[in-house]
Image (cartoon, rainbow, N blue to C red):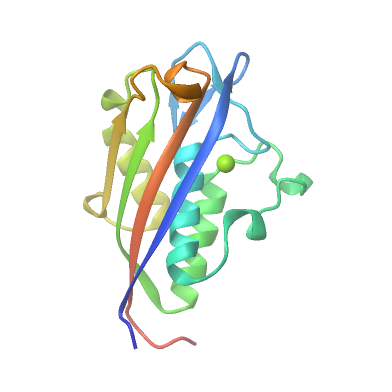
Length: 164
Ligand code: MG
C-alpha cells in the first residue's frame, strides 16, 4: 500500500470593491477583496482541493457546494478544518503543503508568516509543514492586470494508520 499520496489544487477569485481581502485565513489591508460565495480565500480553497485530491476525496465543490446557503460568506477555515478531519478519519496526516499565491498587488511577503501560522493552527500541524510563496504574473492576463488573485497548491499526505 502506498504510504504517501500527493494532490494538486488551484483556484482564482475576482477582486472587487467593498470586500475584505482574505488570503490564507489572514485579513490584508487593500482597496479591494475577493468575490466569492464564501470569503473568496483562493489560497485556502486551493489547499482544500490539494488535500482532498491527495486523499482521493473529490473536490471542494463536492463537499461545500456554492449553492448551499450554509456556506454563504463562510470563513474558509471551516473548509480547511473539515478537509483535515476527513483525512484524519481516513488515517492520513498532512506531510507538507506548498502553495504559490498569484497576485499583482498587494505585496504578499509581509503576510506570509501570519498565513503559515494561521493555516497551521486550523489544520493542526506545525507551520514548518506549510510553505507559501507569492509571485506576480508580470502584468499579463487577468491576474497580471490586478483583476483577480489565484493560487496553486501541492499537498502531500502520509498514511499513519489503517483506515477505520
Ligand atoms: Mg474558490
